[in-house]
Length: 309
Image (tube, rainbow, N blue to C red; front, side):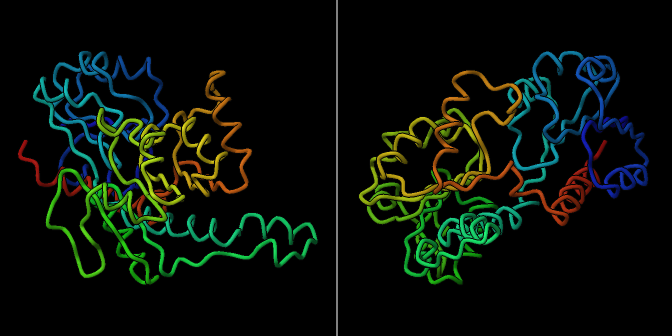
């Protein structure tokens, strides 16, 4: 096959494809205009997050057979239209699950132990122990929404902290373990202190975490989102932060991650969010480690190796 790679991937992927006999075109710096031209005779397209692979792009690719995404899910691919065109869509689900799980634990510990504030104060020669008194995870009830690769990886990592883990997944059942209680949303609303999202972005999950959802919890809660930015309505989140219904949050993703293209509305929620000291933010890097970078390429290469073309 003639395979076009338009994002940076580990060398083992390109080398592996060549060893399988494929023709590889590696253009990690390609522009959108150039993609419209180059895709016309491509059999397989490999993308991470560089562009949204829209219906318009797919229509320019009459011989395209495969769209491969170097990441979890196909959020930036018009998967429905691709399937109409009999184009196989594959991704590296699970390749970065451990990375996301570790990052989530790190962000939560940073929030509970006020590490951002403490580090800043000590660097400025402020030694204030009382202001940096932390909270322990032990005994907390943690609700995991979405129990796929990342949700289950996080649960495993949290199990050593002596927490009570509740997990809800609309599309799975009988997944409970010795350390995870398979739960309904009602049970999570009733018991949980911390809620963390590990779901794909779909019409069902867009703004799943909104004012109604947040105020369904019996307790005041902490919110974590390491899935997709649009799962959380940030205006509703900041309102709950201001009213102490949400005691703190950690976000690896935002509704709009193109900060240079913010609208007036985007600046509004962003400024409210960053004004709170009890928020921990990172730039969509939870699954982005040296190890996951290599593992993602390895997973995709294995998928291509198994194809009969």
